Amino acid sequence: QVQLLESGGGLAQEGGSLELSCVASGRVYAMNDMVWYRQGPGQQRELVAAINPNGLRNYANSVRGRFTISRDNARNTTYLQMRALKTEDTAVYYCKAQMAPRMGLILYYWGQGTQVTVSS
Image (cartoon, rainbow, N blue to C red; front, side, top):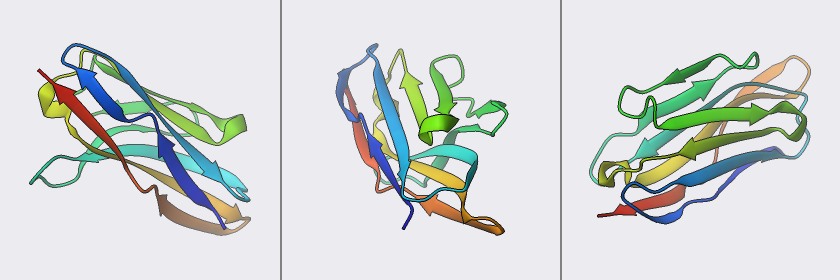
């Protein structure tokens, strides 16, 4: 069974940095788009950054220039490097991936989320 597992969340000071990781475990035939979302307290879940299999990236305006998404296809892993953190970055961060557990089947998977808290 394919699962996504996030790690790297925690507490950071404003202006600090954190790096999140999301690894797919289980049998993965192919991994397509990988996306980071976040949901702050009392807010809707929003897209933070996305990366396709060729490395094409897309960012929310609120994080562009501060966050960097990357992926390691050999390790079925995506990363979100976060710099110059702001208190408004406080949220639960979720990883979502479009993957093929076997040839001919494409499914979307979500991780369980990892808390990021930025203090002033």
